[in-house]
Image (cartoon, rainbow, N blue to C red):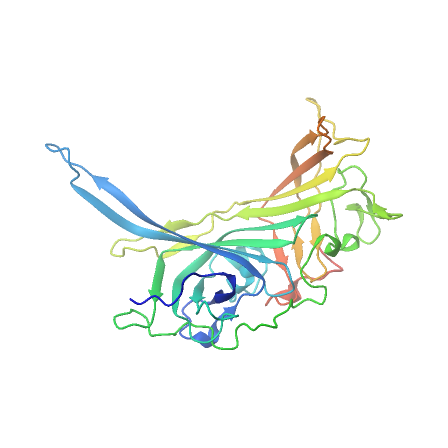
Length: 360
């Protein structure tokens, strides 16, 4: 096979997703704001030995595992997890992720191009992919990002040469997928630290400096602006959940007929803050209760909303730094709930299920 490219770099490969069992390129949605795509394939081998010889009797090949991890910036464009669950009618973890599958395609173009368009030189197509895990990172230094991992068992390469299993360019994105003049979908652009809408967020009241929320009321914390700074100096927020995926098999069929999400699944949320004179300010006593249920809701300028509900419990606190090298002392508050994470955005197909004025 002739090789046309000397290398692949960011401008000449792209990823798109479509509903499961889609048959053509027109149904694929090119993902925007993507920073990286990683594909891992594992061929699961099982060894059988027998009495009477040390050599292997048979090295059985079980079904392969295909894993795709996609990271994108928050920019108002459709989230990866929403592209992967386009059939969803409910925004909850179970409603959105339990049964929905997707097709994932990565197309590779001529390295002389300035954008990923036209006829791809090669493409890899992954079918029946389930969302396995997802996370959001909201740092003070850098862009807000979403990371989504999908898992499945089928991956096919196509280059258009004779003998390929797939029709040439069947799942290509076409000439209008990417241009040299692309821009973020949100008017606020790529989301960064200034794009966390503090007045629209609900934070745990246990974090020292939080006050009762001016809109959402008692039991819900707000990080108010006092002069030219907020009462709590947040450094980063991270939200994550791992749905797992357990394969279901049946006699007479090699591959799984379903991969179900492993509920109950833990949802975690961590808040890192710069300590003031209060330190972490959380008491711990052997006798009696120490913590209470907390509400967490996060809102970004591009319309991304993370609703973790009202039953988040403080699982741990770490207080570090302030060493002689001159670093700041920080506290990280790690919260946990089970099965509650509703992610919505302006371009979400179930956007009408969630409003800013009634986050929980």
